[in-house]
Structures are given as C-alpha cells and as structure tokens.
Image (cartoon, rainbow, N blue to C red; front, side, top):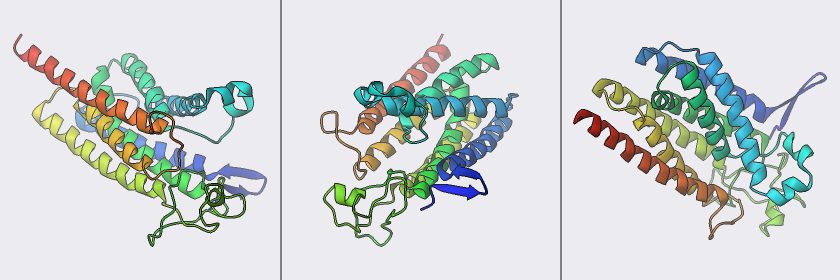
Length: 269
C-alpha cells in the first residue's frame, strides 16, 4: 500500500489524490446531466463548493461519533487528514446543494436529482483512495482468493501491532478489500441513477425520484458492507454507519412517497 507519494520535498496523500480525481469525475457527470436536462449552471462551482462541504461534513460526523474523545483534545483531531464518514458527506453535500439550488435558481429537488449520479461515482472513486492508503476501511479476515493484506497501510493489518493481532486473528491474515466492493457497487448505483434520470426526463416524472433512489440504494449498500467491516457495534448491535443506513433507506422511501403524492395532487388540482 502507498499512503503517501513523495515528489522531492512534496508529500501527497494518496487518499486525497483519489478524492480529487473523484471530484473531477463527478464534475463531468454533473455537467453532462445539466446538458441533457437543458440546465445552465456553473458545474465547476457546484462541484467545488459541494465537495468542500461534503469533506467538512464527513470529518465532523466522524469526530462526533466519539464525542468524548474529540472534546478531550479537539484541535489536533479536527485538522487531521485521517477519519471521514460517508453519511457526514451526504449531510454536508445536501446542505450545500440546497444553498446552491437557490443561488442558481434551480428547483431544489431537481438539483438533488442531478447531483445524485455524480455523488455516487465520486464516492466510489474516493474509496479507491482508502484502498491505496490502507486507512482501515477494510473488512474481516477472509480465505477468498482476492483477500488482501495491508502491511504498510496507515492502519496496517499485519505485524505485531496490526489489526489482525489486535482482533485476535492470525498475524498475517488477509482481509476483505471492502473499498473495492464499494467501488464496484458505486458504479452499479451510478448506472441505475443515470438511467433513472434518463427515464425521468423522457416521461416527465416529478423531480426528486432520482435522489430518493440514491438514498435507498446507498443506504442498502452501506448497511450490507458494514456486515463485513471491522467497525465496532454501538447502537442495538449495529454500527453507527448501519444505523445511519437504516435512516437513509427510510428517508428515501418516505421522500419517494412524498414526491409521488405531491405530483398526483398537482395533477388533480
């Protein structure tokens, strides 16, 4: 694994590089979605502001998962480059998109629909950064042929102080490369959302359908991934991410029902 790339005196984190690549790819997806919907908006500004808000939300969400530890020594943790949470990024990005929709005079639900496929692809590429840096986002031990070891990761699996020994597993164990799973799932979710948006344009479906699907699909995906992740249980036998996933799924279903009900009411008004 390569947590950092050294170019002369310059040190670059591979996670940050992949997040940047993810944002660039998300920009092109967002711009293409704007084009097919005939929307005139500054895709560069939207991706830049939403990306920063997502990163800030991701960092704060991760820190507040362990509030006692954070408030005991907040400043070093606040500016650390380690530790980000997906659902914090969703919250931060959501708030930014609501603001930007008003700024560019785009209906909020339409903005959320357009941003959903871009968010899915950006997240998946960012997860490859977790894989390359070995930041601890891997899963439990496995004997499957694609199991991986992270001896030089930011959070190593092997060695006397590695995760394998800490959890009582064989010192040189291979683990599930869950970032790869999440990347592949993100590609599938992106494809579903993109096609759903295409259908919504063709059938003139109400705005908000794609975003509702995004909440449900990402919630299901993250809940299932957490089954083989090494995150601790904290909420009725669930990890924090699983609890948030259930909330995301329920919110997506309720949101879908609300959009459909509102659309039906308008047609019959």
